[in-house]
Image (spheres, rainbow, N blue to C red):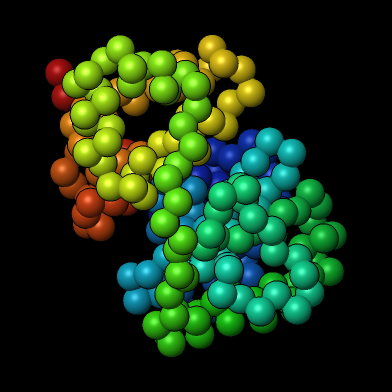
Length: 215
């Protein structure tokens, strides 16, 4: 058990009982528990296997390579329309978790075996991302930003395009673009490290959350 994760649970206000039950199941396996991206994450040989995610209307047990699981019970779902690798199972009650406990254990075991085998998810990246209008408008008028955005790898462009497109309101989409302009100008992807402390470079592993603020 990890002290940072203990603190996460101590401070949790949503789905505390359900997430604790899922944690108990996961800790029955030989996985390393860490706090990543502000949520409990479970690793096997430095590879992310599972995470626990509190959502607004449910909580979720997420598999990083869920697309490779057989899913005989047909309970895995995509977190988003464009998600290619990850899959999760949502819960709204403790009873649901208890009823599925044996199945969840089987899925976790399979996820570990998938990692042991070295299987990789084949990510389709041959299609250009569809850019939201709000992003297109800024790209048209800001040449420096335009150059920086199209200098990113196709995967990073796609990540931003999906993230900027997610909100329903146009004003919110615009605010998102404006908020991440500096990151794009620095050549960083949506999930890239910006503090330089990540052990998973160039990806962010949450190390910035442990930076001490000094006056």
